[in-house]
Length: 159
Image 1 (cartoon, one colour):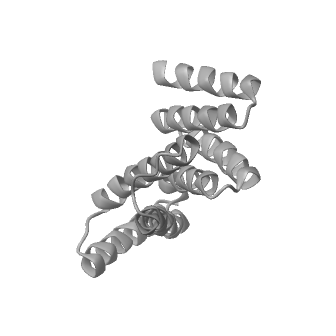
Image 2 (image 1 turned 60 degrees about the horizontal axis):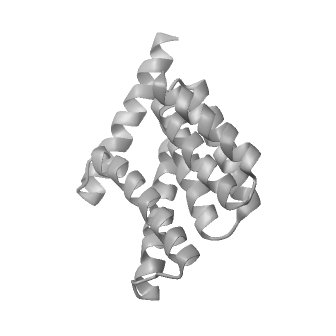
Image 3 (image 1 turned 60 degrees about the vertical axis):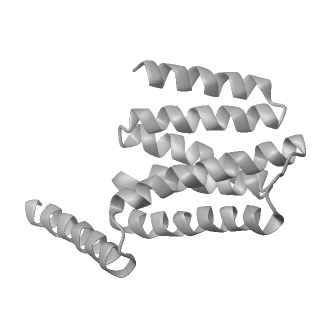
């Protein structure tokens, strides 16, 4: 069992080294990209909702494209370490789906992200996923689920 853990750890180390070597980036930048992607998706939705898109369409498309690219990177990392990356991948995926208008898929991805974060004891990320899901459901007009998500987010943040 210990040997399996060592092999798994070495696989992650090798993947990170490959990522650094090929892209001249560290894993830290992948983590930063997650939040950049979340922010890009959120700003796109806000701009569309309020008809205030100041950026050219190509820039908006580029932001979503970068968020989707990060989502694919996280999917690969999840294959090597589900425990560490699954909830992050699912949350960014949900936000991308939401930004693209894929509401049913987004709802499923939010719930899966919340479940994964809770299962793997990433309480801060569970809180963030619940909060973003709350905004999603509020925008969909489902105040009951939105309030439940915000309550769950608050409890997780307090924890």
